[in-house]
Length: 113
Image 1 (cartoon, rainbow, N blue to C red):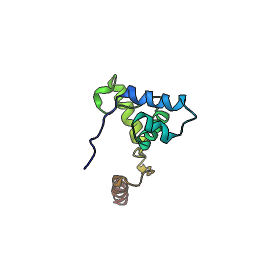
Image 2 (image 1 turned 120 degrees about the vertical axis):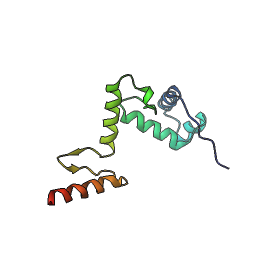
Image 3 (image 1 turned 60 degrees about the vertical axis):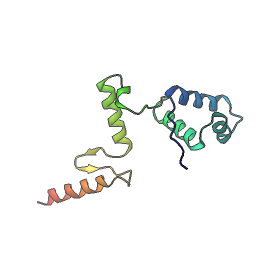
Image 4 (image 1 turned 180 degrees about the vertical axis):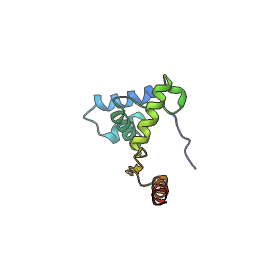
């Protein structure tokens, strides 16, 4: 039997991170158990908090304050996954994106013609 996916609010995620900070005597496992969430979930939220300058990103385009904020988030994602290409040279920091390699092969084929 599979578990139903739970969606937590941004505020709950921030409260969970603060709970972890306020209880340095507890392990990550104990904090997660007290909050009723998985250890990997808490770890992911903490990583997102660190990587996004003290904020938790919310999934969905309607959560952006402006088109500029939406574009910035889009470009940050592209940078994070190594998909920003400069002068026909792709950064391939994330191997599971096969499009990087197909793009590079296409670019090499064009330069040979």
